[in-house]
Length: 497
Ligand code: FAD
Ligand code: NA7
Image 1 (tube, helix red, strand yellow):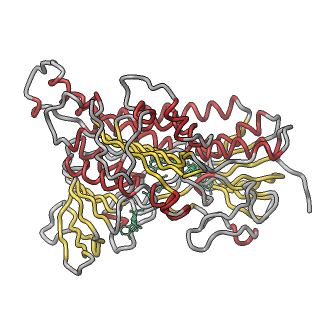
Image 2 (cartoon, rainbow, N blue to C red; image 1 turned 30 degrees about the vertical axis):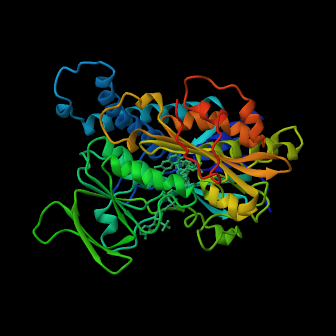
Image 3 (cartoon, rainbow, N blue to C red; image 1 turned 90 degrees about the vertical axis):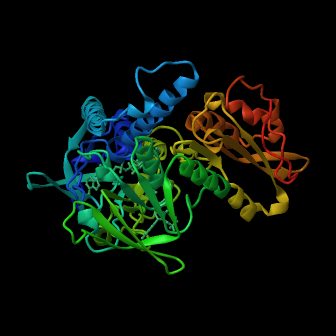
């Protein structure tokens, strides 16, 4: 085979994982190219360099979450003595202003990514890549002109896109998270189909911004997360004004026959009863599909999981073809930005660094995460159900605490439930001690708290070590240093005084 390579490494996909790997490889003085191409959503939405997180994921989601929380702060301000110039009910929000400013910020990040690649000596192709053979890809950009490049190694980091709802008209009438953050007009009365992470986060901030929001839940909320906390999130969101249609799936999505601009959604509940409702916006968040179908992987011999189209890799992120690697959302690992970034960096270090390969293997255990629902839910390690399933109920002790954060202590609006927080430590009985194997918190700023405490779970600390840690008072996080009530005792988990 002619081994006249154009590059040492070609990275396919310019998102969190791809950019991280490309920069690290270029820093090791390798000749690197990165290609990134965004296929428009079925509604025609497109975006710039940086992948899902920057353009249609974490960043716009968190900014909109923040936009919604600001109204809570304004409402709370009255109880803290602030006098607002007018009636609180007259406060209004401009969706187009939010979208315009969020998009301006994203564009600035897109420009920064182009600049970073240039400064790092990574050649950037705004083009879609398809494999021709294990050393060659075809690139096609907006101009339609194909270009062939050869590389010794490839990293596939193409991520995923929202899975469309499998119903006629769904692509024309519904939007996905790919479209929401660029929506020109306010979403209005919204139905969110799906009940996981993305669905609940979007439902939460849309409600917080003042829209009428209903969530259609096929089975349970937040599959894979602690279900006691998922129940609390449901109650909190319901108190916040979100409606839930439980055990219901959509059966048809149409334009009403009266010619109105609304979208008519019909659905079926588990018990066979029927649902019908009209909405201004239907947002589907029913999972994501890895973008592997157009890479021509089969002809190169790269194996994918037929169930979910994800690329199969070994512990070193190597595919079934030796010189081709894959990282990020396109493989079967937690779909999170820092996971993709870390995996990309470590993979490049393993390929081109001087340290022994074993030192730079990616550790996928104890990865912290946060669901940015109106009351945030941070978690790291095992949830209670998984801990019991793995270790047996007799080997698990759970500490829990229900508390009212000072942030909401003076609140006179909303329900008691909407002002409460909750924390939980899942512990494994270990000789005469307990080891913390799961940490969960439902509170304002849960993301910030969980990031710090994740160390404790990652380092396999004992409950006694959490108890020995001196808290910072008055904070929410100090709850983890003072947890005394076990679930098995049946005592009330409310913290007083
Ligand atoms: P991506 O970032 O998806 O990048 C892949 C890139 O490759 C894309 O630009 C794609 O267009 C391009 N591409 C695809 N095919 C080709 C091809 N053939 N040729 C060239 N380019 C191609 N994670 C968190 O950690 N925290 C959060 O709060 C969070 N919130 C999220 C909210 C939403 C609404 C969504 C959708 C996701 C969220 N995520 C969050 C997940 C996070 O965005 C992803 O895990 C992360 O972006 C994955 O990075 P990646 O590099 O694997 O892929
Ligand atoms: P998930 O986590 O795969 O969840 C998909 C949700 O959509 C879940 O609630 C499903 O219910 C529901 N679903 C799936 N198919 C349907 C249909 N056909 N009808 C109704 N409801 C359906 O996807 P997300 O998009 O939330 O997040 C994916 C990742 O991206 C996530 O890990 C983040 O890290 C970023 P089920 O529980 O299966 O009954």
